[in-house]
Length: 371
View 1 (cartoon, rainbow, N blue to C red):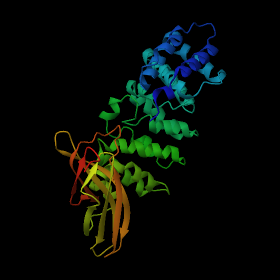
View 2 (view 1 turned 60 degrees about the horizontal axis):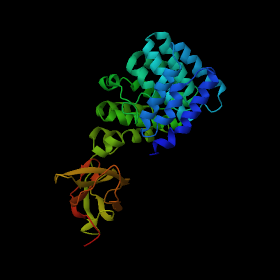
View 3 (view 1 turned 90 degrees about the horizontal axis):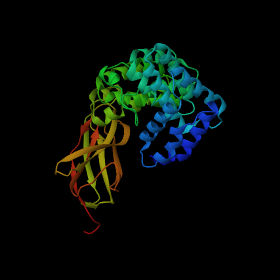
View 4 (view 1 turned 60 degrees about the vertical axis):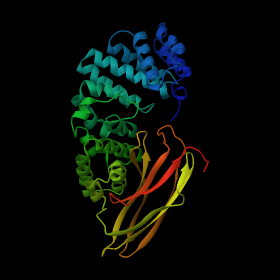
């Protein structure tokens, strides 16, 4: 992930200040100028919030005043684009909510849609969703999802994701299962892969809390598919597949199968932190009909308290004829990463096929490369 200073930097602050000065040449812009000195130690979202608040301070007045300033900068400042747009859209949404009127709310929705091609308004829209979910969804489903602009259509899906990265949560979406499904229904057949990927990620977000709703939605879409529907559904159900959810497996055609599984067999009994371990396994269809298989593997990591927790990784998908046998192999790295801490001790690897876990094979993770 990029560093905060690569996205919203002192140069970003200067560019934003210059753009706003284009719209209000007589303004002092004291808060924006001060932000150049304040931004250094802050993480990304706090940088965006700092500039949002500075803009609100430097452009006082009602919502209409701010909206006019932003539109003027949009139309006249050549560099009014990129990451400086995040605090701008945040200021627009904040001032509209502060005013608490339908005219300001609706205009803010329109302004965010007009800016989203310069940088996605997906973070700012959360403020409006939290203020009046139903009114926002009315615009999103009724206008944005049918827009000729793919950036706006993508905003409809991405901005309403339950667990959008870097964004504040919208409690109303989390509390109302299915509230955003009409948005996805309008977009899952979209001609743009950019939009469809957002739909799949949104569906995957929903699966964290409402797996059955997601499976039912996927099943309905697959009942009237286009050429891209199955791929979208597979991506949207990826977390449920890793968890072995029976409904998700059934929707994608991964029925229970009669199999003979050999392994996994490891190429070593111990591996040092930072090293790699290779495993192989054989899978034979011992049933009377072809078997469509989703083959994953699980690494059971040792935790600090001595217990183990599994992490599932994709391996392959195959269809085996009766008595057909395949061998799968994979090398797994224990290179240190920021998102996982490894603890020495007994770990294990197993396969998961159509949601059913195989026997586990244990090995030792050692702290050094010393035997």
